[in-house]
Length: 317
Image (cartoon, rainbow, N blue to C red; front, side, top):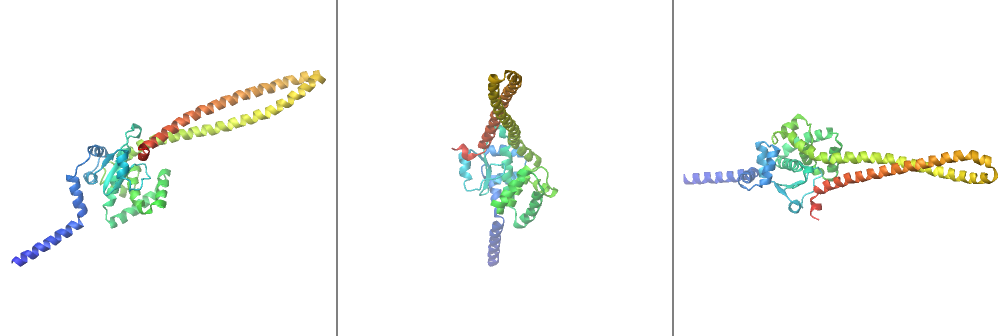
């Protein structure tokens, strides 16, 4: 009886070790989510994401942290920089988010956290689960015509094809409003209202889009004004040649043919008036052009400043 009991204990021990190995990810996640310390700022951020219980669990299991530039760069130094609109990284099953205090970029921390959380979701899926999900992701991605998204996916295909589906999974879930129902069902496991996440994305992208729209409008005006200025200057050059020629002719007529001279004076004065008017037009167009350049440069500076706020490397220079 003792031998049987001992054998049973060994079997149970072996089974326990095997189960522990098979479910080591679950064991690790349960421990971290329930016993590891959580950053208070990250907890506050989680409330704004409106996560499901499964989403909250994975979020805690990933020990998310909002970090200043120096700490963020240190934590993410081995990770390829995201090409999307986010500034975060998921490494060693931890989520790190760059802390952005600029109110113009409100929403960036939320969408970044959600983006990285979806990397944690993808990381824990089995190969068979990924295979089916990847098929759905590529189908959805290929149907999207948004230029920014298309360029982003194209860049991943070229530079990191092995991460393509993983990145598409995070981008679709946080940045694209309308998705196929099967993918919506998938994301609903983690977000109670995915549209909130997309709204965060839209909110801070708008700061860039509005600037881009203004810069584009200014550039169109400047191109038109430049064409008008060039046309006016060309006409001035033509008139200068004409006036110079007429002036020489008048000087000749003044000595040799007073009557002919008097007949030409009115026409000459008319050309002078036209020339002076064109000079004023050229000045006005040039002043308007320069004023728009000042306005455009101010918007461009604002755009550059926004980009710098999202550049953790710039912030530590």
